[in-house]
Every structure is written in C-alpha cells, then in structure tokens.
Amino acid sequence: MANFPLIDMENLNGGERGATMELIKDACENWGFFELLNHGISHELLDKVEKMTKEHYKKCMEQRFKDMVAAKALEGLKAEVTDIDWESTFFLRHLPTSNISEIPDLEEEYRNLMKDFAGKLEKLAEELLDLLCENLGLEKGYLKKAFHGSKGPNFGTKVSNYPPCPTPDLIKGLRAHTDAGGIILLFQDDKVSGLQLLKDGEWIDVPPMRHSIVINLGDQIEVITNGKYKSVMHRVIAQTDGTRMSIASFYNPGNDAVIFPAPALLEETAEKEQSYPKFVFDDYMKLYAGLKFQAKEPRFEAMKAVEANVSLGPVVTA
Image 1 (spheres, rainbow, N blue to C red):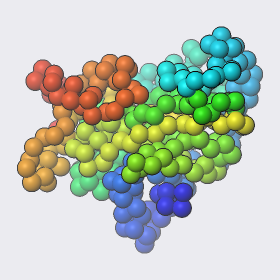
Image 2: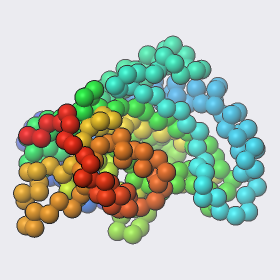
Image 3: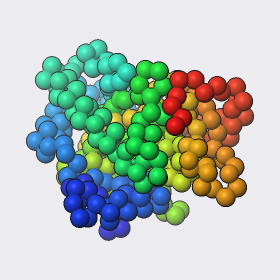
C-alpha cells in the first residue's frame, strides 16, 4: 500500500507542479490507478453523500439484497460462484440527459445532492483529462473532444453497497474486469476495504482513505494513447463484516464518438503501426456487455476486425 500513487492536487498550483505531474504520469503508465487528495470537492459534501447513500441502502435496498441472496441460494455456498457478484447497486445517468428524477425510492434531498455531486465530478474529470493531455503532449482539450461525439460525453454513476458476506472465498463482491469507458472517479468507503487492482501479477489493495477520490483509466484511454496508458484489471473482495459503500462515476465517450489512437502519439512510435483499432464507442460497449469479465485484448482484436467499416463521423482529429 505504501507505494500506491497518492496525488495531492494542491501541489499542482505551485513550485511542486512539475513533480506532481510526473507522479500522475507514472501512475498512468505503471498503475492505471491513483488516489486524489485536495481535489476541490468539499469534505462536507462528501460526508453528506456518504451519510445519505448509506441511509438509502439501509432503508430501501438492504432487504432486497437479503431477498436476492435467499432466492439465489447464496447463503450456504459450498462451491465457488463465478457468474454473480455480491453487490447491491443502482445507476444514475447524468449526461447527455439525466434520469435522476426517474429513479424510484430516492428522497428529493438525496436526488439534489447526487446531482450537485455529479456536476463537481464532471468538472474534475475534465480537469484530469487535460492533465493527461499535458503529460502526453496532446493539445489541451484533445481527450474531451475525442469523447464528444455529436451529443457530448456519457457520464453516469454506479452506486454500490457490498454487504457482509459469510463466504468471501467463494464469491467476489465484484469479479475482475477492466472498465470499458474513459476515466472513472470513485468515492469509496474509508472504513471497509475490498477494492484491489492487478499489478505485475499480484493483487494489490487500493487503500481506503477518508475524503479521497480514486481515479482509474478505462479501455478508451488505452486506445487513444495507443497503449501508453493502460486500463487495469480490478475487483472487489467481499468482506465478512461491514458494508462497503462505493460510488463510481464514469466519464465516457458519447455513443457515436469514434475512438482511435491520437495521431500525435502514433508519430512517436518508431514503427508507426497503429496497434489499436478505430471504432464507434457504442459498438465497443455492445461487445463489452457480454465480455466484461474477460481479458480486454480479444475485445480490441474484435474491433479491429470491423475497423474498415468505421467512418470518422463527427469527431475532432486535430
């Protein structure tokens, strides 16, 4: 845990900017994950989000989860279960249009709070994309434009709770996967751990820290950087006590955005071979839906096979 990349964003504003940018670069190249401190979202807001999310789970979702566990006979497991996750979730969509008003059981105060939180996370995601551009030598705004498509990016939140599990050796909280999209911002429980990433063949804990936001990179960043930055396998281990809260917000390309390696990064590679495919984001997501818990490389290969059919469409290539 001691080596896990921690980035203090306040250090971007002074004499330590160069060293901090170097830390972000190293995290993107070698970890695919980093943890942000002093990210500009107030502790008061984070505390309120945590409190209301946990209250909502207790009131509206805990019993449903218990019923699901009973219905699927997951209580007295004797053998490993590999096709289901030990988690209770709901999804909020923010962009291009919001569905927050349509989600049942949410109190008005909680709806407004999550809308406010999403707005701040969206701003942070775009700030981070520009920091990545700076480190990659791409013009400011390149990644945001690459994600834009005709209607702007997709941005949504998965609110998860991982209740105590009697057999954590037989069922995962969330099975190992890479994230399909762009950049992921996670506000996680600081008391109950469970998130792990795969680094150099070993599972490493992502340290739970109060008021931090954990960032990880999705498959689309790997494609656009032509593999310079990689998405990383991660999972959630179920725990025997304590319910772990996880609020993951996904800043992804728009459905019709055409994703391909940035030409400026291809010029840097000696062989100039485009090793990553060009595709429409929505086509990738359709493929990912059935292959989420498998290796990403076959997904990229499958996209390569249909690459000839992709026209550039409404995308900025400069």
